[in-house]
Length: 534
Image (cartoon, rainbow, N blue to C red; front, side, top):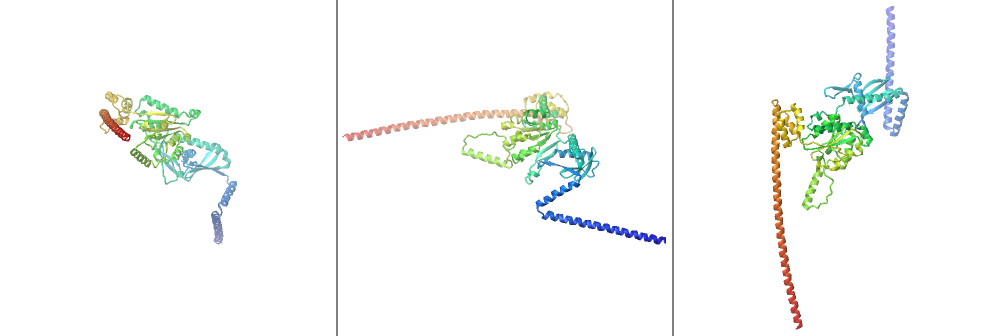
């Protein structure tokens, strides 16, 4: 009997399990069909309902859900202002979460750190991590171009008044400590709409130049460093006097005198980013203004060789001279050639002046604007006047003090018997710091300090000889020009004398002919009178 009873019980339990599974399956089937019906109806409504009615449904559906859903969400987008302008809040949140999410997030992305040897981990896209602050729990979601924070509405005041301020503050500290300085250049792509393209592209700035390694006189170097450091600490002063917190520097001098190196040393001294602006790639003044807006604080905006950039070097002349037909034709050809060359850019001098110190130049702060040129005399005075280019720095040929800095850098000593010869030759000829550095650089493992200094002395002697030959040639050309001018003057004087003699002779002949004619007329009149009297 026991086995029979056990079999009966097992049968009953099996039937119940089958009925339960059947009921569960039926419930899921009904739920699936209900969801499918709802989705179909919602699709039909969205497709065929008028847009205004559709917006009405969405508006009140969200309001209805808000009564039952107790969580709030705040989004922080990567770009702001309706254009590709980076948000500082987004960057601070990214830094904060990168430092606090590596232990909790399951999907991370890695980037190179400041020293190019460390790896910085941050949340990957569509990853969620949690954080707690004063008993309030929050959820951070990372999407493609935004971060979203979700929290219970009872913690609204804690999150909005304290937590977010805490996140931004910590994020900025992390950015400052791990900040990579960047070198930017402006980009232009006609195929992409302006509002969808980034205005600048960047690489990590790793130039090693410092003021200590520059070939300059110590006093001049000290003056520039003090000027830069004073500017970086003068935020309150600029606000007090009512000026935008910016300063212009004009670096001028022959090629090879260290203008680009000076810019790198400035950036390293102040820990600023560098924006290398290529004017020929800028379409017009409006795009130039957008580029200015996209730059950040703590930056140097550089326009190198501005005397070669577009038509910005000539003074605004008033042409009152009258040219011959040949000269006019030649002038028109030059103008047409220049216009064809600059057809891709319509940046004007007035647009650049507005860029430097117009109203838009006050957007942001703590910025340096640096121009470099080989020929300062070619630039329009309005472009380089004080207030635009506040400090003019001439970088000229290498002096003996500059040579000693380079000798210390390249050969690692401060005195040598050959220094006297170098000093004497540098007083007699001119050589750029770039040429000095090239001669001091060892060309093989066998080159020692003696060899390098001998190379420099030889280069100085050759430069001296070349200078003497050029001076002699220039002197001879000048003398030949004077002789030629004298010959031309004598020939012109002789020609003028001949012309004068010819004119005088023609006048005398004409006078004599006139007298003969008058005599003939008088005789004819007298003869006629006599005949009538008879």
